[in-house]
Image 1 (spheres, protein in one colour):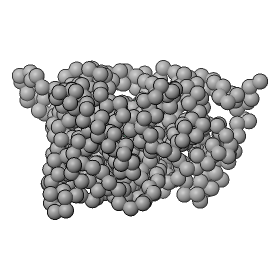
Image 2: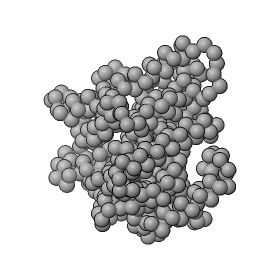
Image 3: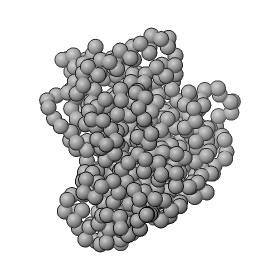
Length: 469
Ligand code: HEM
Ligand code: 2DC
């Protein structure tokens, strides 16, 4: 017999009291650990209400499968009100990230063709490969300048620049030049704005931004300033390409980038294109850079694994004879390493959907319209789901054992990460070039954990040493 919705365990009766307790636990930065603890207390399903944020939480891959089968034709995530409130406030259009319903679907279908289809991925490879080579050249230079034949540093700022340079080269078909000695202060400001935007979003998941705006709260003002910085920089880049395209007479053969392709395709309005390209540019910085930083950290902690990966890359290089696209098909362990990084250090603490239909999970009835969250961080560390979850083991993704709804770092289905192919290609090429050039080592024994600033970030600087091979 199926049990009713009201019997799902958890604390969902008093959102205000729960918000107070959440705040006492420093929940704004510990969300992932609190979710883990809740699964330990309540089991594989629990209901929760913090402030005005109400959800049912699940952890099992089999339950994730039920959730995604009930997402409907217009899958909808948790509405991040801070993001929509900014756009409403400044009278800007929503892009694909924030749209819903038919408007989302029609935009997404067109964007898919230019951003995530295998056909265009081939166009991205030479662009991203060049950025990877430039990054390596920059590290060699830093090593030379140090006079010690090595470079010890917190790579996060360097990786932000690498990620922004990569996503910009794909979007605009042009280099920004962020890996040169002189850095454009506007580009640096853009990077800082993205970090601030994420950081100021998390409290507004629980306290309505409209309220914070009315009382003139600092977090709302900072959030607005952050998005203003993001939009003005993206507007400048977009305007540049738009102008070039109008001046250009002859048809060129070279791949012109995502933005120019969308403009020439002429299927979306300029305003829709601008909104989504801005989101792609902003979404493409902290996500891939932090994932790469975690991967280098894990490789530094596992020197033997690092050598194994290096050998795979060397063999792939030899077999593919200069064909980079071919090379990307011969590095399963490198791909496994990226999956393993996202299992232990996911960017998104959860995936969420509003149910399009009633479902039954763990024998509880859950009505249509409910917000259901899959605890991605908790699932990645659950010994019932992954054998010895605490071990970083890329080879687990090679074995034929079931991966059914276990590799969900980029989300699932038609609403999954639009930047997925860009991110994967960019990260794979980065690792290829780094492994071919440097050995990565770690300083002392420092345990780094995650902290929640809307996305999960390392809670302290990760200091690594790069040595030429
Ligand atoms: C959505 C993860 C990189 C742009 C998402 C979602 C996740 C995610 C989990 C939600 C998917 C869902 O609800 O099913 C990641 C990870 C990345 C990454 C782990 C890198 C390691 C990027 C990059 C871009 C990007 C590089 C831009 C070039 C987007 C956009 C959406 C999205 C636009 C919203 C798509 C929609 O609503 O239709 N991402 N992402 N992401 N991501 Fe990413
Ligand atoms: C944060 O409880 C925790 O890819 C919340 O590139 C639920 C939630 C909702 C939406 C998620 C967000 C979490 C984490 C960051 C995500 C976001 C959807 C897209 C975004 C996963 C899990 C991200 C980082 C995008 C950001 C695009 C950019 C323009 C802001």
